[in-house]
Image (cartoon, rainbow, N blue to C red; front, side, top):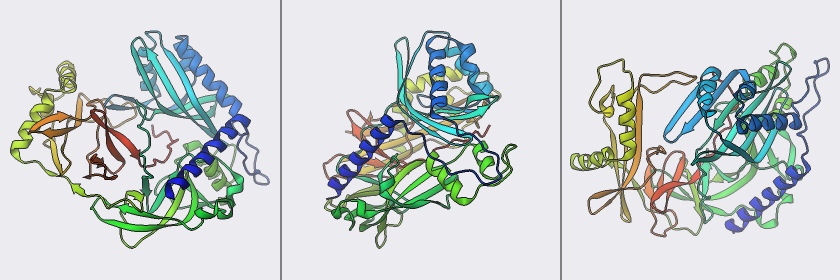
Length: 469
C-alpha cells in the first residue's frame, strides 16, 4: 500500500512540476503594505537572462564578462573531490580565473527559478567539461539586484557527482519525527487548506500548509503503518498521521532586511503572513507525515510495515592489530600520495614532518569496525594541519582522508571513492533483508553499488541563500 501511495504522490508531483515549467507562471506574492514603497519582484525572465550571460561568458572564454556578473558581497562554495573551499568574491574570481586558461563547455539542465522581492533562488544541474575532465552535479545560486542590474550573490555546487537513485522498496528518511514522502514538491493550490503559516525553525525560516486530504485517494486518508529504525537498533511500528507540506530556507540577508523593515527602500516590517508567503515561494517544499509511535523517537529510517526488523550493528574501536593493517592500506592509496605531494610543496609555518598525517595532528586516526554477519566493514578517517575557516581563508596546509574498507580474509579491500569524503557511520544494517549491508550515517544511507559504497538516501538539507562573508 505504501509503495503504491508513494508512486502515485511522486507521479502527481512530477506531472505538476512539468506543467508548471511548461506554463512558466511567475510566483505570486501578496500585495505590499499600505503606505510601503512598492518593490518590484525579481522576474524569472531577468534571472534567466543573467544565467544565459553567465553561460555565454564561460563558453566563450570571456572572464571580463564573467566577473562582472558577481555581486560585491558574494559567497561561493567550490567542491573538487574530497576538498571543499569557501570563498569570498576576490577568492572566487582568483580561483575561477585559472579555469579560463583553457576552453570549457558549460551546460545547464533542470532549471528552476524561485523569485522573491530582494533575491531569487536558482537551482539546476550543471555539466562542466574541459579537455578530458567532465563534472556533473546540482548547483544552487542566489541572485540579487545590485547597481541597477542582477548579480550572483551566492554559488554552490552541492555535489561533484550525481547521487545514486533513491532507495527502492519504499524506504523513507525520517526528519524530526516526520516521514519525508516527497521533496521539491511543486505548488498545487487544490491540495492545500489555508495560507502558509510561519513555524519555528532551528535556523532560517519555515512555513507550513495543511493538506486537504479529500483531494487525495481514499486509501491515503488513513495512513498506513511503517517500521521505524533507530541508530540504537530499536525497531517500532508507527502509523502515518496528518500530512502537511513544509517549505524551509535560510534567506539571503537582503531578503531578511526587507522583511524586517531594515532596508533603505522599505522601512516597514512585513506582517507574519506576508513573510510566510515569501518563505513558501523561496524554500524547498517537503511532503511530510507525522509519525505516531511509542518509542523510536530518534528514528532516521522508515521501512514498509511488512519489512522484518533489520539487525543493526554499531561500530566499535578497532584493536591495535587491525589499526596497523588498515592504516597501512590507507597509506598505499593514490589519494594519500597526492596529499603527500601537496604537503611536500607547501610552505609551512611549523617544523616539517616526514608524513603529512603527522603535521599539526591534534588526534590519532579514527578506525572503527562494523562486524555485521553479512560483512565486516572498517571506517578510517584522518586529518592533519589546520582546516580553512571559510570566506577565502587559506592555511599553510590541511589534509584529510576518510574511506571505507571491507575485510576479506583479514585483508582490507577499498569500498569507497577516496576523493569523496565519507561521514563516520553510526551503524551497519541490512534494511531490506537481501544480504546487502548498508551503512547509516547521520545524513545518509550508504549502499554498495558495484565495488564501492555510495549514497542511496539522504536527509533533506535546508536551502542556504545567505552570504556569510
